[in-house]
Length: 357
Image 1: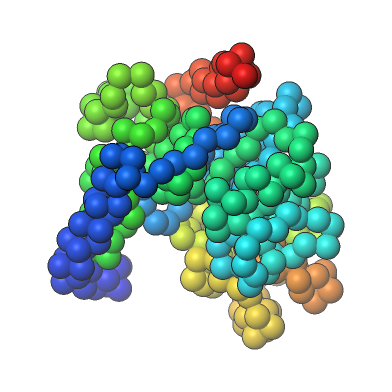
Image 2 (image 1 turned 45 degrees about the horizontal axis):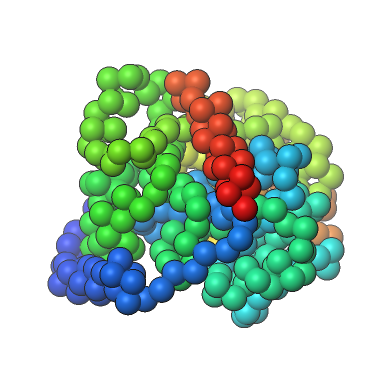
């Protein structure tokens, strides 16, 4: 708690830099709004998943939600930047691809949906034609974390904002977490407030909608996080979380708070090894994980990690095969029974786009 307070206090002193950052992004957005800088469109439905802030708002689970709902109806592809990969330029995942080559989140998509094309590329405007060249049968592309990449104009922008840190209450980097103008929310067709309390009521829902102040035609939805049964990282065998089990949580994600809450509700005791977001695990990290596990006193003990972290640990497949290392799947669940309405909004966008062709 002290370190959190210190960090927030220190960030206040960075306010001049935040104002400079705001000025830069304001000018950049003005150039795009006035069409001094151009945006390109493509002849197929592009769905953009993004946010206005740095940190975890649930973009990867939203991409997976959309892929799961669309892949049986359309030939869907995903395109990501490939953050913290060791390569550059365009790449299309194949059976030999690793997380180091395409990044942890795209690798997660590739492992979960091996039948769909998963591509990465810093320059989306160049990567989209390359993806279509490699997979010309692609009918829909989901752009992961591309809301700020205005050189490509998506037909449907889905903007995510964390219930615990709404963009309306945030400030610009480095004092706050915003990386885009607050007013940029108006460019989204759909806003999803993620990581809500599961017992969020209609009164608070209306307050948040009023605070966001959607423009005409803009739709707002609310989701909470659901965790599925953990599965072993290698064997895929599922395991329930009993209260008597001691847990070692290993994570390198932007926001582990929801996962910590899950463990507090399922285990009397847990320890945590926390790494930086998108951390690339080394053999020394694996040694530290083994040592921390060995020091745990309980007879019943397991190691838990996230799906993002798991794809970065798989390079140690032989070393971790015998470890009780389990992966916790996460997904969005829409509140107020609005999942079908959201699904219909996405489906209608694709159908209407195809009618216009």
